[in-house]
Length: 284
Figure 1 (cartoon, helix red, strand yellow):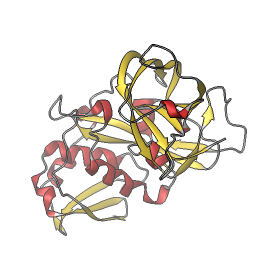
Figure 2 (cartoon, helix red, strand yellow):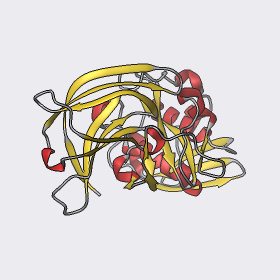
Figure 3 (cartoon, one colour):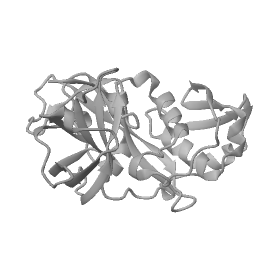
């Protein structure tokens, strides 16, 4: 069992530390870890995946759609810290999702925007933003409202700009699931190699997907069509196929890697692809 820094491997989806498991790992034994999912997560992505130990929390963040103006798109996220879950969700929403195969698909929040404070009073969540929020549109308000309303105990939301009530508050009161665009079938997000800080050799190569999936087929092929040798794992939360290569020196940043894959998500949505990706290399 290896340890990975999840915020690096799944910086768009995970916070904290977590381990990898092989694809053949069976269901967790009684007394092992668990994942608690919001109703919104289960609606759009099905049952939550398992973890080996600890308690994790599965939720969604709704990003404003660039393809369908006025709509928001749910995206799965995980954390091990329940206490900061609302703050994590809002900060990730503000950071956007211009990553891998999703580049250009979501409308970003205004540049420079900051979450200044978040508090809760008798079921009302009060979120205070910097002045840049004044540049946001109605879809941004829908994204904020839907992201926060999924959490237990949240009855109402008040948006403030530098401590003053925002005009967006009139928009968040009436938003509902009609603003949500259904998720597309699973996607391969990126192909990324990880190495220790200052190290020359990579440790593993990760094919990241946009949600928990069951991998039906995964092959990483070199330029000559030969598969890279090594052991294949499923990552924490089932969001990546991880190759521990037999020869790490084969891998260089920006080298082309052909990925042949077939996956199915928890709601039975099947997807497959056969494409060339340029390898990203990150340190942890």
